[in-house]
Image (cartoon, rainbow, N blue to C red):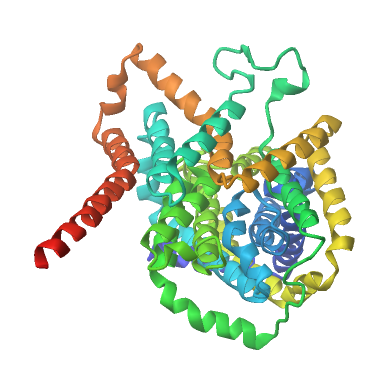
Length: 507
């Protein structure tokens, strides 16, 4: 009851006219940040952070967090319209969102993505509001072994629950791990596979790779097809939005499952990227029409968007409750809190109650404002589909190049982008999945660091991965998911072999 009254006080703070203004400005800026490939929520928040140092801490954090909410919404726009993930966690959205746009269903895909984003983010805010003490105490139990077990669970679920050729999935994962190992070893300080290049010391930036793999490769494929921009006749009105909303209740299980996965991956170190892939994989596994995924299934849009936004929002919980940032954006916000003289942790809820609950209230309002704003501007984004691709392609390529250059202000990144564009083109032509490569590139170095730290702490003993019930459960579940697919394939093969025998016996 005390928390409820504190939340109501927080709404009074967040609903003041100047904070509402900062909220709307932040959401609009965030949408722009999310649409531009290579910029992203963390970079957008970091760029604008110095501008808030003279502001009231509550207003400043509302502005910055609203930029984050807007970026969460905006990342789906280019993913669906151009197959270019505006945000890292929007990669999985391209798998079915772009095919829907090609089929002339861009409006339905965008409406579904924005609504799923709102549902996922709302579930994360509810988690922060009501379960913060329990989750905070649980997260304190995580050490390097538990971190590695979570990463292992993500990788194994992708292999075991994938519908594609598992040999190709494994090959794609291995290439991603190889790319993740390039650069400076964070534990030993040694250089690995840089071949004397100073540019490779920092490794391959994820967004450079993603822009190339998805954006440039798609341009190459479309040019090969004759500059035909499929789906450019997209049409949208209020009826489309209401019709899409009316059909969402039938996917309640997918939304609920993805929200739970997202909240889990947000509080643990899995992150929004892993959550989006896992949400997509689970939706495909439990779907009655798994073969329709990748061809324009709306569940393939709902699942990753819900999971990613639930994870992105839930990642703020350990930052507020423990002072442990759960994402890159949370780390930037953590720096802002320290500059403003606020120390994140359990005492923050006691000493700065008005600030904390004002922030939580702004999360509810910011996500609602984001949903309204993006839905109101859907016709603007759908209209882009009517522009001939021969005009759009050079613009997209320039935007991709600007995005790649902006990340580190390096011309080398533009060349890397083009190189990975060729890699993505070859992968698509040979029917190799790109998602496992991207997943391994993002999480590979973090998984390696956790694995090595766990071994260093245990003196090299692998028993550390069975040292307590939590890590044992996570590792066991990972192995179960890894073997689940092959075992089910084997059972299916035995059943198919048994059917002719039974038919002959019946004759």
